[in-house]
Amino acid sequence: MHVALYRLAARLMHRLPLRRGTVAASIAGRREAAQEWAAWAATSRRRGSPLVWVHAASVGEILVADPVIAALRERIPALQVALTHSSPAVARWPCGLPADVVGYLPLDEAGPVTAVLRTLRPTLIAFARGDVWPEVAIQAAAHGVRLAVMGATVRRHSRRLSPLARPFYRRIYRLLSWVGAVSADHAARWIRLGAPAAHVEVTGDPRHDLVLQRAPDPAAAPALVPWAAGRTVLVAGSTEPADEGVLLRAAALVLPDHPAARLLVVPHDPTPARIRRLIARARQLELAVAVWDRRAPTPDRAIVAVAEAGLLFDLYGLGEIAYVGGGFRPGGLHAVIEPAALGRPVAFGPCDPGVADAEALVARGGGIALPRRRPHRALARVWRGWLASARGREAAGRAAQDVLRDGSAEATARALRALVEGRLTPGY
Image (cartoon, rainbow, N blue to C red; front, side, top):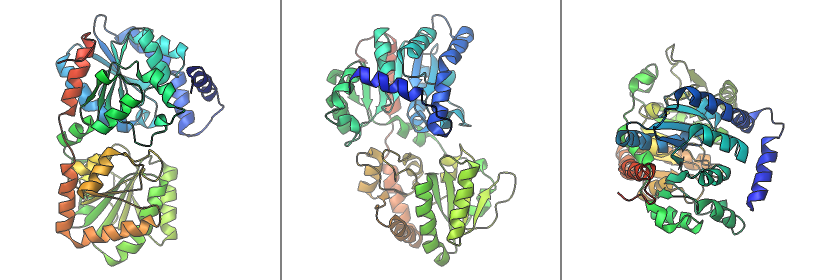
């Protein structure tokens, strides 16, 4: 794809008369971004202090950025951090975010991007995972702003690697000053896409640091503690409609024969409409679903849905088994490392090849990827197995935990500090 063609496509996309949905909400927020960043800078941008502009597309990318920002602040106390995102889920996120200011990414057009660059005057732009916006990269390089990618991934079958797309991405990725890849395979793919080989380093995944440093808080949902006590709970986190259909059909097979089994469903986007649809689907299978309310005792039902965001990690602590949603759509699998860090065996949908954490879980026996054909039967089978054998369940949980490695956040922060301090290559 030629840069001119991308620019035309972006302008058309940004001007579509969208009124509903995630894309419409994202574009609406991004249209106002340049003005909002200017208002913040007028009152809060400290003269003489370095500023790192971190872009984390959604909540999953914030897991990458969070421990890196914390480590970078320790090294540069005067640092300011501006965090941009493109997902309405971040705008609604109830938890604290690791930045001086958080807002939408501007529209990826030369005018809005240049306006924000002049407003924020960043020393460095650091993208989390791989959400490198072309116009941001082009305009930042033109303004002398260094570019980095942390926790960088490119899946084996990514469309970026197609013969038609590669020339376009080479034009963008050759501008990168540093790439911290999660593994050697991912590093090789970044180089193949045009990132300068001398600027690519294998650091591991900073998300591992974040989850290994945390402990679940049982007080986050106290009404669920007695509901879970003495039961074997499968916590299904970040579920999407396709996951919920599989989970409910598997529950219809498993729960009647296992009175001590429980299912806690935590949707990725727990809107009232989503919860109503979940309850209706369960009713069709003759299953009853209670909705958790922090203000009241939880009904003693085998299935409970959580209609509140921001609690998932703590809720994983209530269970002995985990399911992670998103695997039934391309590139959609959510973070499997949160339950793995707690030593929970993990099941998930048939995600794309090249999802490093998911592949490692399966390879080491800490997780299972469901097949596309009759996935509910496969889930019921593995669920029954983990219910029947506490020893097998615990061994799978230990295998899942062993997949995680810490130290990436520190390595990434050292490299970013080198870039902030003006070194062309991030030597230590």
